[in-house]
Image 1 (tube, rainbow, N blue to C red):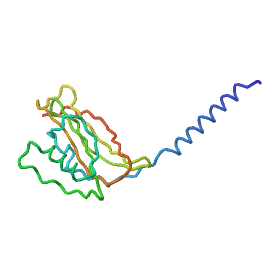
Image 2: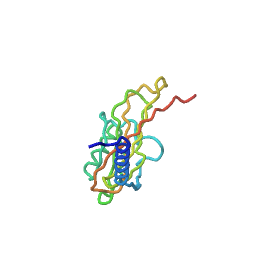
Image 3: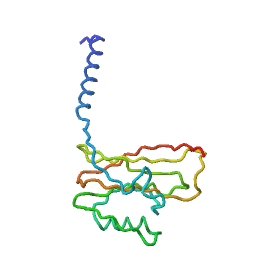
Length: 168
């Protein structure tokens, strides 16, 4: 059997086009989800949380919520009042960086989107640029937000940024 070169090229082009079309048809569409951070502003809920290891987690009950709240505020007396959460309608998402060797690190839960595979939480992780003056103190940045309750899987997507040195 003899195949002409032009026919192979056309066949490969047709296959590639069909694959691209199939992939674009299966890309899940996303919808924004209401997200309410527990701290106003553009920085982490706390820079001194006492959580030594990196954590990305979801809290769906009041027992786990109270335990996290007490852990976050362990060194502070008196501890701030536990914010009420209606776990029948909402859940808590947590992003903690773990221990960092200095100031200048930050974590912020920026947004949430739902698609056919679950809930995606977008997290901004900031680090100071090399050579920038920062506080010489151990930090443990953590951010907390409430989102509508879901039984679907929750995944965290991180976006790393480097914070440049600011002028005095």
